[in-house]
Length: 190
Image (cartoon, rainbow, N blue to C red; front, side, top):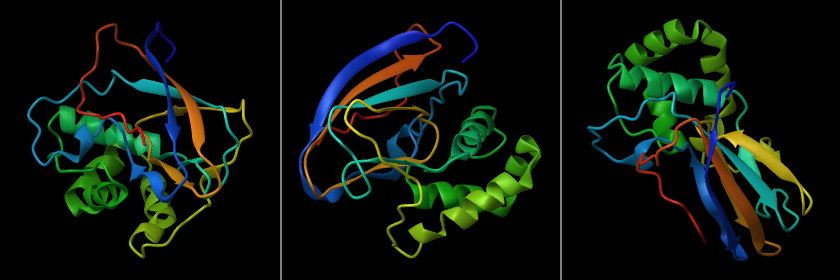
């Protein structure tokens, strides 16, 4: 963050063996996909998550998948909604996220804010798989037990299926705010 940050929580959880994704493609700090939101959180109250895996993870076996650069678009969306420069609509899941940024008016405002049309176009091209209901492992991060991933939770990510074994994770959340954040996010423990 380049400024003082605070440990908000530490937890751990177990995802049981399953042929369902632990959590589908989504972005945190997006009000859990609520249809209507009236109290918008300052986007500069960002969070970083640390996942420390206690079991091996791989594609189709509990790994984190993260779309590089999506955190920049996610931040811009939160900032522009907070400043009332674009209208809020649901964007928690990847389909809604794409729909919000593909809207012509939103696209223009985001492009101007980001000062980089390519980041939006690249994201839209990379994520076309979601409209085809295809599984995409291009963004999977495979790790051995003891490995860790640190990520901006405002980017688009998911937890893949756990087809081989259960997944054990320690999770740390850091923020630049001292008080508890309530962005409507839920902790997903399967």
